[in-house]
Image (tube, rainbow, N blue to C red):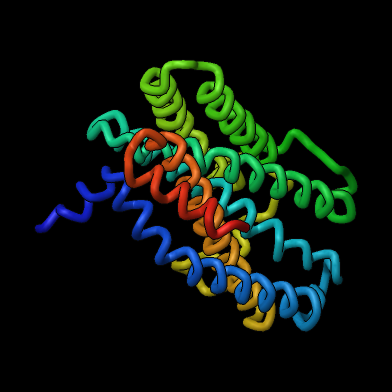
Length: 251
């Protein structure tokens, strides 16, 4: 097996060049999917037979919650790559993704509270799913704080990687909390391996929104990583030439 592509990922210059080619397409795809999913889910999907129109918040809540968990899994993978293979670009990805994951967790918690008020009669309960999601937010905050508090970049990268790897144990707790404990939170809305409980006209726009959220995440992640790469490679000739080109072209 040719692992040349994997070793290329350790090159900031190669990453910057290849990511610049993918960004426009990824940005347009995310915009189209999000616009289509929102219009379809909020305007054309039928109301739920029990929750009425209040169920429509799932078109924001579910994608945000899924992305918040997936993003943390990515942080753990980046932590392993950074510790084992010493790839500095892994730390770039980790630091760039952590704030995005934190915001997705905040959105999931806020929309869950809005959903919970008419459904459960309370904005917040110390439910296993909600509590574990709150812990996920604190883990994100911890990684962001570590990355900013430790002056030495290598030491900060190691500390953030260790916290990301240790904290990943919370992800299966979030996923299986509704099965392990008696919780108010409902089970998964849909599963890849099981037939959706909702009719197609309700879960298809949700699938579009999930794909749109992930494409949006990829777009923002690449933008943040490219900026961080330019900062870290500021002394290299290619980075200086790129900054000069960007300044010359203007906004």
